[in-house]
Length: 324
Length: 255
Ligand SMILES: Cc1cc2nc3c(=O)[nH]c(=O)nc-3n(C[C@H](O)[C@H](O)[C@H](O)COP(=O)(O)OP(=O)(O)OC[C@H]3O[C@@H](n4cnc5c(N)ncnc54)[C@H](O)[C@@H]3O)c2cc1C
Ligand SMILES: Nc1ncnc2c1ncn2[C@@H]1O[C@H](COP(=O)(O)O)[C@@H](O)[C@H]1O
Image (cartoon, rainbow over the protein chains, first blue to last red):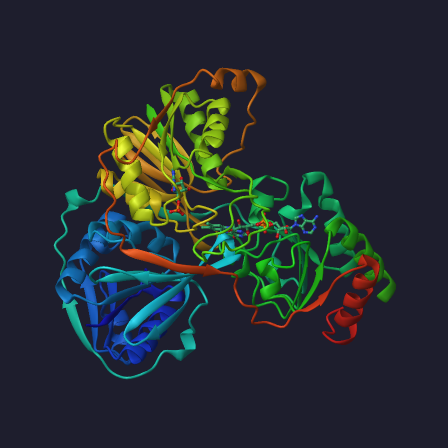
């Protein structure tokens, strides 16, 4: 019985969330009295595997193959299926990244199981493991249990475990050579790219006022823009506002937009889905205006006004102007 | 091209959620329902692909009887016909995908589109599982689809503003991200036409699917506990605004 953390790297650099997964694996290993190991996939892994060798782990699996150079769901699934079948871990943990979203359900299915995705916490007692995940975009929590035979598979939400808790130690590196054939890979990945240059740099803004779907329609956006102006800040938005074309994509905050950490972030009519929170939770002071007192945004806000933004925002603009 | 669009009916976005006394699910009695948001975009993408390269759009939905309303709305937007697997909500994405696979297999679609994630369960799994069950290549979190002579080329969204193009042969499955296109409204004509479009109703048993043991079990659901002490101002907006600005100026010192 063991716990295996599957790390994510691209071009020799770790995905930040990998360390959180490693920390979680070590913590669970202590609580469940099992050894923890880690695996990394790719080509030319000496450096990365070497780094992992100085962590408190039983083993480091360097899963090497030339067909793992560029990520494809087919090759990753093949490789991990073989590793899991050989190593027989009790629990396999992944960071809930875009890449893991792309292959973990496939991998689990190939093992005739369902994975538990986007886990935010766990409870381990008497060898039993309960995982907590969010439903309804963070408005409800659910306790989930695995049933049937291991291996059990789960991915962990960004920020759910702390990367700085990774324990140092030493581990033996074991090379694992999966059998993958070029004909197994049906998709052809091309170069990564970014869209045109950004003209607004929200990252350096000191004050950001961000608008969400509570604004109802494009014609109402100037109301929030006025608040941004009164505060001397930049206007930003949640994803649905940019999806609808009400504001340009470059003003989107969140996992698929910009990451910001101003000294003041005002979220107006934003519910606080995790994909939005990861982009702004580093802000020094967070203010939320929302009509729903149970909106998840209040979970991370320092100050909040529960009310109708169409009544609150005009009053806020006036109060800010008076205070200046 | 025969395109399948998998759509799920979920509680309307602004619903006030209450936990049912069983502690197993939410109180459903007073809820209104709508199409899962990413599924609206994937349906739209299916309709646009059909308009460009011809073929047929088939809506596939597993859900209780009330899901028929959401299916009708999809037909009114322009889908040609629908398959409704009439089963109460399934909580396990593998079980759901098995049902969808059983219905899709005999139809041999060229392309299957799903949303990337459901607003209620949020598993983000059903599409990718379905691809694996049907032995199809897939790409997830797709923001653009182009038909090529020998397959498709898609644009995948990655983290932090990065994208990647991926090519693959057909048949294939794509999970679609919100914002990929501009949604259309159903026209009056569309709504009228939808009334005579075919909705084939099947049950899990008719699809030859016996309930199999779930590999994950949801013990209970509950409202999350507040861990952070937020200073909340409620009531009169004018007073709340004044109090907040006072705090921002003298306590947080950010303005
Ligand atoms: C892979 C992936 C990536 C994503 N990336 C991002 C991202 O980068 N950024 C992002 O923001 N989202 C992202 N999302 C989407 C995210 O999951 C949420 O759907 C989105 O953040 C919700 O936006 P919202 O809060 O504006 O809308 P909603 O969730 O609809 O919330 C609207 C809020 O407004 C409130 N409201 C309504 N009317 C009023 C009123 N009159 N007065 C006051 N309050 C009111 C409601 O109570 C509600 O809380 C991503 C999702 C996925 C799956
Ligand atoms: N019951 C269902 N019927 C049809 N499609 C579904 C159903 N459940 C999930 N899906 C599809 O799978 C996607 C991902 O759902 P989930 O794995 O629950 O996040 C959704 O966006 C739908 O396109």
